[in-house]
Amino acid sequence: MKVFGIFYKPGLKSIVDEFVQKLKKKNAHIVFLTSNEKEIEDHTDLTLVIGGDGTVLKAAKYVSSPIIGFKGGRLGFLSSYTIDEFDKFLEHLESNSFYEDKRQFFEVLELNSLYLNDIVAIREPHQKMLDINVKFKDGSFYFHADGIIISTPTGSTAYSLSLGGPILLPNVKAYVLTPIAPQFLASRSVILPDDEKISVETSFPSHLIVDGHDFGKFNKFSVRKSEKSITILRPLDYDFSKSIKEKMGYGKNYFK
View 1 (cartoon, helix red, strand yellow):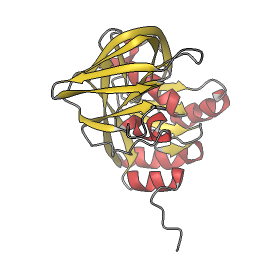
View 2: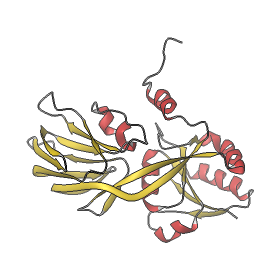
View 3: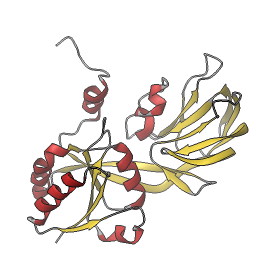
């Protein structure tokens, strides 16, 4: 008997109840997961996440079993199905027709905290711009800006992209370093190999936001690749470039 963990966004309980009834007809055992139930993670065969990308980010930190996301938010880059495709998922489950999309975590050393998307250091609106020094094995950079983003390939389609950063394919082993509102127009995103440890120091304490969670103010922090990764199960016809075209219109042929 398969054990399914379920992690869902508040407000989608009625959809979750519908999914649970269908799973029980397949003789599945259901465990409802929350961020406080870490001991359950090793006893699930598969974690179903119903919600947006934020819900998937939360769930991914607490589970070790593969994840399948059902889009209940806006973009849903981390989701494999829409909430209307649950029957399609059950068909794929029956035949085990999935593609494994592995995503790497990174960690903020001072916080002992993992992130899958990005870490943001940003000033208060009433404060002066930050002097930001970034050091790594092969050199250093200086930025005078409102803040800085250190993004993973997974997070390259989030805040970093809205500031003009590049889109990285999920299997690219790199960070994206993107200054926020830099004074000098030549200050643009930089791509660094993910085997680097990156140390950041700012001229005064700024908010340190890790995957959307504000940990307070710091003027020094460092990040590196974690040993933890998470596997997202996708339909066999999953195509990252198709996802980008459908959700953002990027690289889409409008002349057809």
